[in-house]
Image (cartoon, rainbow, N blue to C red; front, side):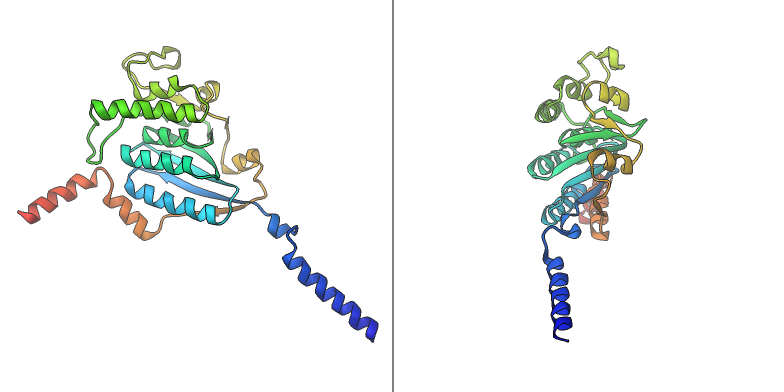
Length: 249
């Protein structure tokens, strides 16, 4: 009986040890966050992404994959998002899931790696201000410099980033002569070094990155964050300002 008791005690101790063993499978499981960057880029999106990045950092994630599908948006919001992405120590990946235009291109260039689905596009970085108007020359000059700097920071040739925002650059070989803004297809982006690869879907991307067995955590917007995005939308802001002026009159 004593031998049985000793054996039982050993089994219990081994079981407990396995729970705290730093080399067990659960402890070694990689965590990857997937965060959408969809629709218009505005201040509400920046606030949402700040929360998502903070959660990923606190969880000790291996990487954050940003699922990008946006026509662009507001300059100052894009600038803030760019600083957010370059400021984290986590690996950041832009998954251009159809389009990363204007501010979306800038955001993608501020990640560590870019992957695109077949038929995806990136570029055409014309900018608008918080009121939804086309930005002036001063803002345009800043934006061109910011696009180039983002490309240089990520080790990419800045001429293509400049051509996305500057109509004076002639890249006729890529379908963007003078007077036109550059928009890259998935094949063109891969050719000029603005993409690390073309993948069919998120699962293929995870496999390519070596995260096929990782725990995937999707971060979605809360109701409050969705409301904030609606209120800070560049089309909605002028309407709210007009209503405010009428009420205050």
